[in-house]
Length: 250
Image (cartoon, rainbow, N blue to C red; front, side, top):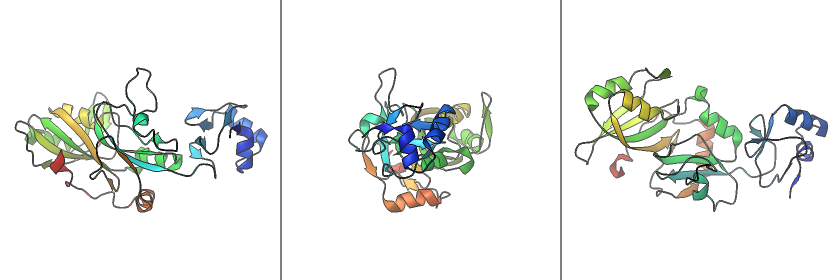
């Protein structure tokens, strides 16, 4: 049931009702990612209410999903151009969840969604260096490109850290398959690094984020994370481990 935000914040012990108004006037309160104003209403059981990006105590149960995003879907909850969104793929989830980071429209693979704003912020903040591994099908001079990708580079004024790159067996003539692991996660980073190294990207799929692997989850399908997986994310365990186990199906 919807209530005034001032009442909700006060009832959850965040601050007084007057203090809640001050927080909203300073832009520190959001509802489902949108800055809130005094007098706004929300449903604490359905809406994600955050102060400084951190969910308020109590309220909705934290929910964690893994989605295998297909190509052609944008990583947003709504799109002004009418393109398919990842929100449509998880519409049958009873909780309102939000993407953790992004995969561009033409990329596919592992995408995490949650209503846990604190964890989402931790996973996406560049200072934490969470590894993201991609399988990238490319054409071009791979032998020359791998050393370039494996050291820092600057592309159009943006500096990228060195990637961890391994060449995987490829069953498609004329192309090569690379495992590329990065820690920054900047916009279209792997595509731009590959282009700068003289490679053409034909397909790009994220297969790992931190300790979590995509595994056999089908394209367009999602599942809840297990408690042990959530704990791994929170503890940042096994982030340095590399894998090629997903290469056979790409």
